[in-house]
Length: 289
Image 1: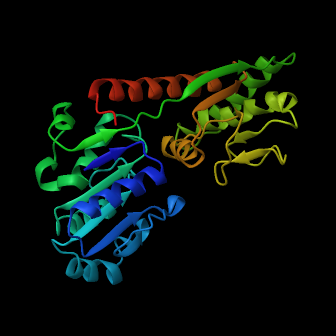
Image 2: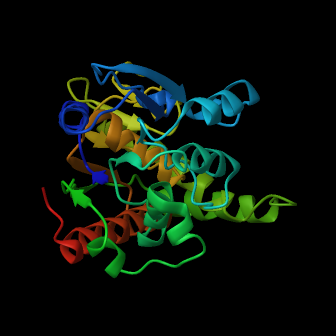
């Protein structure tokens, strides 16, 4: 089974119900270190961290130990869009040892619906290997989703005199000195640069999140140590890291403090498109719990 959008307490109930209706000898939980769960499993069990999945000391022992009387739980392990990733492939070997599989993921994809095939590969690699996404697959498997909808608002900061000129000069400088750097670094760097115009709007009684610690303020967290924020100052340039922020904090509202300059407009637009793709998935599946 695949279950989307559940918090830990809800996942715990799914596992408990599964164990009550199946004769399971041992449960193996594959998890990612940022989100280590405690499922309070009533039978013999073992937690295996994502980075350990490929380790020899685990791989051969687990292949020998996991059998048809074991349950494998894959919890929040969609960590790359590369379906051929080595860690995924090793996990598939474990999952192939038993028909008892539960796949948990907070969002149905990292970037778009094609990523959902990663979860279907966990469920049945032999069936879905090499296949592209099709809505039909959602009807042919035991899949349920609890939609995690994010309300998105934008507030604009008033720019000081000369800000647009300063931004254009900075953009020209970065273009002129790009050298062998990846061009994708330009909007990332400029997004951080325009954050300087937001500093006057940071209030001591509100919480904020930014890409790094340049503000040096106690109420401005970073994505390395995220806290639920009233305002987003910078989006993380990696979709997965921003998804992790939403997942770890349970944030259901994002208010972006924007300079109104092109880098902020770009990240605002990309997030809106991601939210539209997410809503399309929820609406098209109808697989609500």
